Figure 1 (cartoon, rainbow, N blue to C red):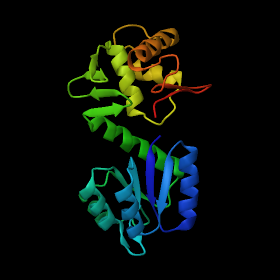
Figure 2 (cartoon, one colour):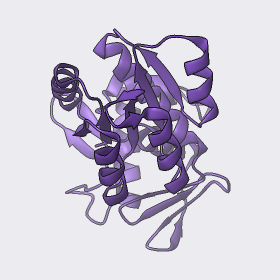
Figure 3 (spheres, helix red, strand yellow):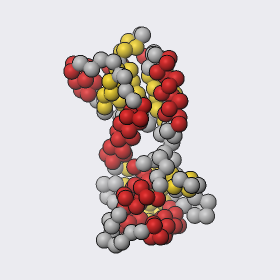
Length: 222
C-alpha cells in the first residue's frame, strides 16, 4: 500500500482528500505547515508527496527543494495558482506533476498512480519481501539465489510490481500480459501462470505473502 504525505493548510481539503485517498487504498499522513512537513519527511518514508505551494510558514517550493535534497521522492504540487511561472518553478525544482485547484479527487488519484508507475519503471532494482528484481539485467533472485522465470511469468511479476498497493482484476491482468509470449492467453492460462509464479517466489505458495488474493476482486502486491 503506497504511503502519501499530504501537505495542505486548508483543513477542509485535507479532511476530504485524506478520506478519499484512504478509500482508494493509500495510507495518508498530513501536515499543514512547512516545518511539520519537513519533520515528518525526515522521520518517515513516503512513496509520494502532495504539496501545496502556499503554506503559512513558507512555501511548497522551499519544501520541495529540501525534500528532493534528502531523497528522490515523487512530488505533485497542489495549488490555486495556475500561472506559468509557478508551473515552471515547480517543475524545475524536480516536481513530477502539477495539479491546479479546484480539482476532482478521482483525477488527482489517476495522476498519483501515473507518477508512481512512471517512477517504478525508472527504478532498476526492485525489492519485495525476499525477492529482488534487477530491471536493467532482467534477473530475479530469491534469498540471493537467481530464479528462472519464463517471459510471461516475468512480465506478470513486473505488472504486479509496477502496480503495488493496487488490486488488479483478472481482466486487467489479461490486458497487461496479452500475447506477450506469442501464445494465446486466456483466463485458465492466467491461473496457471499465477500459480507457477507463486511456486517460484513465495516461501509458502499455499499462503502467499507477496501476491495476495483479494477475494472477489483480484490480486495485490503490497
